Amino acid sequence: MRIVIAEDLHLLRDGLSLVLSTRGYEIVAAVGSGPELRAALDEHRPDLAIVDVRLPPTYTDEGIKIALEARRKHANLPVLVLSQHVEQLYARELLADGTGGIGYLLKDRVMGGNQFIEAVTCVAGGGTVMDPDVITKLMARNTKRDAVAALTPREQDILTLMAEGLSNTAIADRLVVSEGAVSKHTTNIFLKLDIPQSHDANRRVLAVLAYLDGRKTD
Picture 1: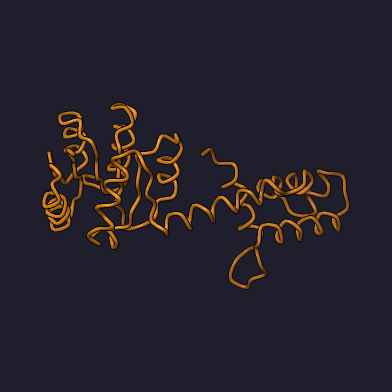
Picture 2: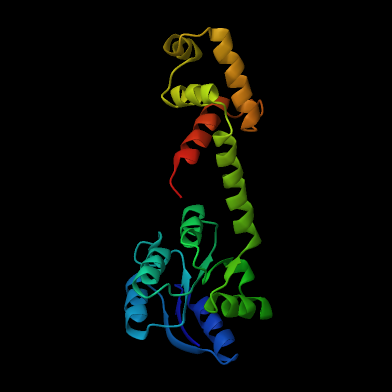
């Protein structure tokens, strides 16, 4: 199996290369920046790319953007993403096409010997490997989106107007209902979205954030 590794931390890059090469994998390129990764993928057409999410020169999302680009360009290239944190947007984008050959692991767990090798083998073979923390966060987001979708039409109308910044009084005027009815629906919205009473957070803001998240395209 021919592998390209993109990791800006020199010691981790060397460690990954050593672990894989001693197991018989061929490391055709081990690079430390976004431009180098793109060039290596175009030149070598590897069987698997192992990439960090954030790479020089900007240390934002070069690694995963280039990996997604390569999957479209090179027939769903298998990609195993390594990250310090769970980047939900990109994890969802990796999963979106449903073709497999993708993985998302957190760095503090990648040097676990056999577990890492098993992940590499699975992803290269068209399977899917997700760190438990990634799964937990994706499920939490799906749960919130499902909760927004489960609101009644009237509750969704009120939440939409709430997102526009209207007060309960203004919402009541817009919908031609009593302010008491709006207050009752608002309480139901908070309950359904599992937004508890709190002295530290504005429940309306949290409800609007859930509404906006539910409107995002997967």
